[in-house]
Image 1: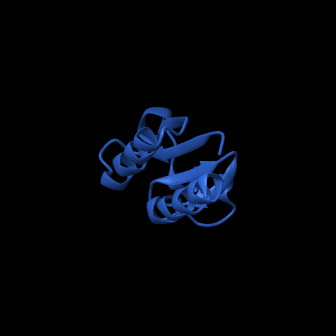
Image 2: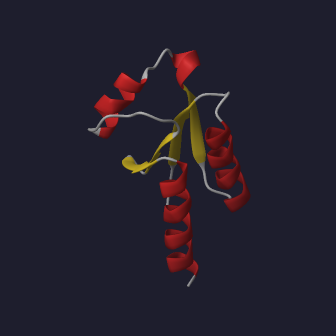
Length: 84
């Protein structure tokens, strides 16, 4: 797992949890504040290829993983496989 990109809002609890998970696990990540960048959920839909209704939206190595729950599962699965 090389790079995690998290699109979200500062006021979003799940966005904070995703960032914290990266920090705790030592995963290099980029935080994209949607409000600061002027991005909408419609903009994210273009990146994901499907409708976006919630944030965060998280990408790993450029591949869309999903929201926080999907990302947490992805981290557990892939880190366990790497260290297994």
